[in-house]
Structure formats: structure tokens, C-alpha cells
Image (cartoon, rainbow, N blue to C red; front, side):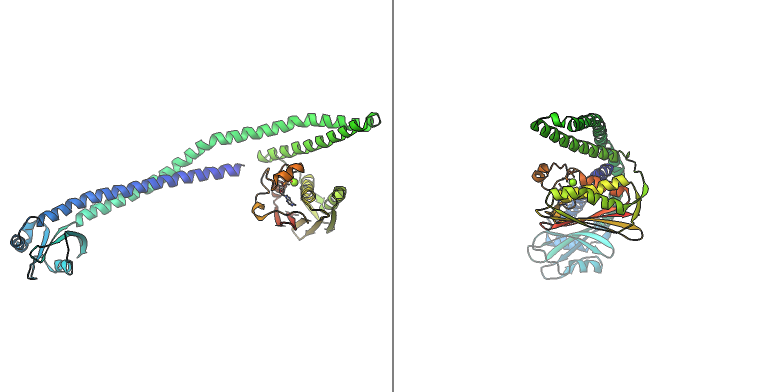
Length: 404
Ligand SMILES: Nc1ncnc2c1ncn2[C@@H]1O[C@H](COP(=O)(O)OP(=O)(O)OP(=O)(O)O)[C@@H](O)[C@H]1O
Ligand SMILES: [Mg+2]
């Protein structure tokens, strides 16, 4: 559970940080485009003005004027007879070469390490006129602006990440509290229920034993049913209590070295009646003298949980096979059934709390979907893990891997 909260918090933080970064980037792009457009359109106007409303002879005259008098602007004319007139160097020849505009056109041009904004248009009588402004300086300012904006984006993204971490913590606070309260409630409620349940069960036991002969058939049946229900409820309450304890980290494992071979064979024996009553059969293959250190009762509980499932989710005349093997460091307990199997898409989910593949069927079997989550918790608390293999309609095998 704590893991889930941490994951959610992290996810919230990333979502918030990524959103902020996207907004910042969008802002940077829009700001840059707006500023560069406004600066460049000023320059373009300047270039257009230079060639507007002027006669060809006037343009040729200006194109021949000394460069200084044109305040840094460039001008070139291709006369109707094809003669090129300008007072600039070779670079402008390169710029206008092959550029024959159909109407007013503009281009940004890199030449000799300088940047120019050029406009050009055809002359009515034939030929073309080109005028350009040097925008090297403006481009430099824009580049610097771009760098500053990107640096600011990076800086603000880090700030936003810090901020989002705080915000995610704040947002998740109430959820943590409510989880805590819920946990405490489950813990307290299971505790409170244990006493009345044990009183009920003791009372029913006395009724069953001492009053058996005085009871009518109907009453005896009722007492039997009640005992079965009380047992079921006791086991559910115990499961819930165990889960509540596992959540709050209060579950203490009593570790000791014990004879696992004996435990597994006793478990198989303990189940043989239930197996028979359900029209199934059980076989086992148990390596002798396998010892492990762990909480014997909890390991027994795990084996029972898997055997219980193997019985519940089996098919008519089905079989169950239990195998215990070991290596130098590890032990392997396999519980294999010839049951209904688990569809692949459910395989990762069956270990989640209250998850049942077929709810209708499970309800009839009186199952709550917590067996496997308890089994996984206990096995992982021992440093082990559980592997599952299943084919629908053929059966399922669970392999519990534990350390000696
Ligand atoms: N051996 C199996 N064969 C087929 N399906 C299984 C098997 N073991 C578990 N399942 C599926 O996984 C689900 C979860 O199992 P789990 O033991 O956690 O809960 P449960 O058996 O439904 O209830 P509980 O064990 O709490 O009484 C089951 O409802 C069942 O759908
Ligand atoms: Mg179960």
C-alpha cells in the first residue's frame, strides 16, 4: 500500500512537472516567434520602402551611389537590357544570381558570415530590382533572447519539479490519512469481532457435544450450519487481521528451523478428506528431511491456501499433485491441479486483494479473493517468491520458492 502511495506521488509529480515544462516551452516558442516577427517585419518594411514608388532611372541612380550614403542598405538593379547595376562587392552578385521574382518576394540570406533580409520585385519595363538590409545584429539579439529563454525554461522546470513534489505531497496527504484510518478500522474491527466469534464457537461446540441427543434433527442441522458459518467468519476475520497487520508492518514472523517435509506431508494428509469429499484425488512426491528456517505456522497457512484453491477450482474427478524438492539453498513447493485454469490476462492480478477471476463462481464457493494476497505476503516476508503457470481448462500450478 505504501508502495502504491509512493508511486502515485511520483506520478503526480511527473505529470505536474511535464505539464509545466510544456507550458513554458509553448510560452518560449510563442514569445520568440512574436518578437522575431516584429523585429524582422520592421526591417522588411525598410527594404521595401527603398524600392517603392521609384522610377527605373532613379533606382539605377541610387544603385550607383556610394555605399555609405545608403545607410547600410543594399540595392541592385537588373536593367531591362539585362545589365546589372550595383555598387557592392561580389556577394550581392551571388545573392541575386538566378533570383527572378514574379512579384514582390522576400528572402533571408546568409552571405559572408552576415545575414541579410532581401526583397525583390520585377520592373514593369523588364528587369528586376533587389534591396536588402543587414540583419546580422538583430539576429544576434534574437539568438541571445532564445538562449536566455531556454535557460529560463530549464531553471523554471527544476523549480516546478520541486514545487510539484511539495504539491503532490500535499495532495496525497488526505489519502494517506484515510488509508491509515481504514487500516486501523480493519484492525480494530477484526480484533473486536474475534471475541464474540470465539464465544459463539465455544457455545456451539458445547451445544453440539452435550445437547446432541436432546436436539431435534432440524435443530442439529441448524447448529451444524451455524458452526460452519462461524468457522468461515473466524477465518475471514483472521485473514483481515493478518492483512491489516501486514499493512502496518506489525506482523512479526516467528522464525525457527523446522522440518518442512513433515509439514508438507501433514498438510496433504489434512486435506485428503476434503479432497475425497469433493470427488478429487491427491498425490504427493515429498523429498525427505528438508528443513528450512521460517515461521512454521505461516508457511503451513500458505500451503493450506494453495491446497484450498486447488480443491475449489478443480474439475470433476480432478487431481492435485504436491511436490517438495530442494537445492542447497532453496526449497520448492509445487501445488498442481487439473482444474479450470486461469486466463492469461488474469494471471498478474490474482495476487491482488479481493481479486477473483469468476465472481459468480467464487461467491458460490464462499471465497473472498484474499487467499493469494496473504500467501504472497507471507512468502515475500520470507524472502521468497511464487511462480504461476496455468492453462485454461487444463489446470494450474503454483511454485513456491523459499530459502532454507
Ligand atoms: N488453482 C486455481 N485454479 C484456478 N483459479 C484459481 C486458482 N487459484 C486461484 N484462482 C483464482 O484466483 C482468484 C484469487 O484466489 P484467492 O485464493 O486469492 O481467493 P479466493 O480463493 O477467491 O478466496 P479466498 O482464498 O480468500 O477464500 C480466485 O478467485 C480464482 O478465480
Ligand atoms: Mg483461495
